[in-house]
Length: 213
Image (cartoon, rainbow, N blue to C red; front, side, top):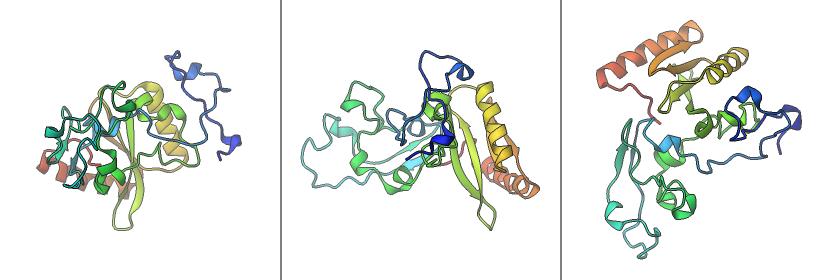
């Protein structure tokens, strides 16, 4: 159960500015992806190879066009996962059409910081589908020190989102790689900046501007 002493305001769709959300609107006691599909839409990079058994029963994947099932796919900006359901009125609104057969890497492994926050330190309105950013927990250096990688999802990060991010990371001493208008920025100790310099060189050689899941 959530610690009620650390209550965070939930998002009401009628509010356009999060600072206007009444504090008595409290988030739920557990978090789920729900209809959020940001990590599948191509804002992060990944290779998807579904684990679909050849002897599956006909129609076991609902009404999904069977000719598109075979083979995997690469997701990247402009190319969402081909198994992503963008029609909320189809397949009971579930985002992944092959959830039962989704691979461990990266689909089942990847958990964004909002979803994995069992202490509810990250507000409800930081959910990727509401904030338009994805926070990916990562590690750097030989000691595997934790940091956050924050990726925009189609629009420039909003001021209130960036402000919360900077304050939270400063207070909790979380090094952060964050995107503003498509450009990467870094805040953290010197060893973090040194590690990110090496990472930038690798990304430049591979022509990758986005983080991988």
